[in-house]
Image 1 (cartoon, rainbow, N blue to C red):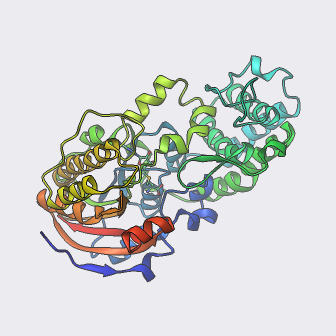
Image 2: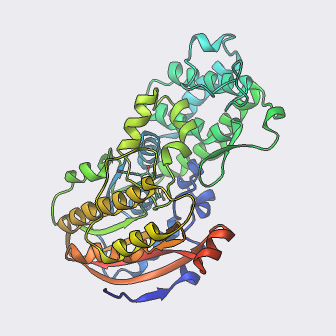
Length: 430
Ligand SMILES: C[S@@+](CC[C@H](N)C(=O)[O-])C[C@H]1O[C@@H](n2cnc3c(N)ncnc32)[C@H](O)[C@@H]1O
């Protein structure tokens, strides 16, 4: 089996691999994303590159950290995103034509409408789809109390009827998205949505919801738009941010054009982004039925078990085959063939992607690939090593695997593995 230089870079990377660092940063702060890295990670890469990149790519755009930051450095960056919510977020953050006067005009018009909300707003604005959105007889839990949902629907109505410029409509929708979790009875627990402690008695009035929204517009968005409109931008990455499954839409990039890829794909950790961002998807009417939801899940990378697939054969990789065989031998109670199928599907997707990366990259180009290892049934899956093998099989050269940080595992899992799992940055040369 191939070996790769493994370098401990925890001091360098530990604090910059988290999105939290972006929370006060121009534009990056428009929506509190969790599963991203910080703009410092991008800057760190640009500093170490011996050349100025001409054309980059981010295949898993998420909240847009990579294309936004590269745009700030006047570097073209293709990006791809399958979730309609993340796509909307990234496009809004990449737009460079907002101006203060128009923003204030629409803001005031929306604020005026919110002063006299329609009494029966649900006759004007549809309740987001699903059984647990608001209180219904027979349900023990619901995502929003009535006053919160009505407050949100008031805002959605005001945006729909008072903002006639699509760019601002989208911008205001992101301001609304940024308060949805706060307005709901839920929190993101890292894996999925859970109910807040004492949610039953935590009622927020309709008016307070309006205030949260207007505050986000006045303190965050307006301030940033003021700064943005005073800057001149040479490059705009909004037009090359594509909606859809990157496994297919990567074809939009010409061969031999890229000299840099920076990305962090979904990890092999069974987390489904569709679930994690369900409230935003529903409230913004980006997903309106169970069929929409299933369609979206089917187009995501195979890193979760929310979709059942036909049996997937493992790719020809000795490390992967050893892992699968150890898992099959394990006596873990939760042994489950859907998980094995997900693992095989994940690496099949990676193989397809790296074959495309190799085609789209110029000689001399570099890939920075941020992933984490996983463990199932007491067996570690060395995701970074398997992806390194895949990259080399596709004709590229792994320069090194950099350990970025240890990741949290349950005490039970650390005990059965005898070690912590880590996140790494694989540096690959074409
Ligand atoms: C770890 S996040 C990326 C975070 C990003 N680096 C940031 O800082 O915001 C991975 C993203 O990949 C997206 N994704 C999953 N499957 C995809 C697919 N098949 N095509 C494109 N994007 C996909 C998810 O919706 C998620 O937004």
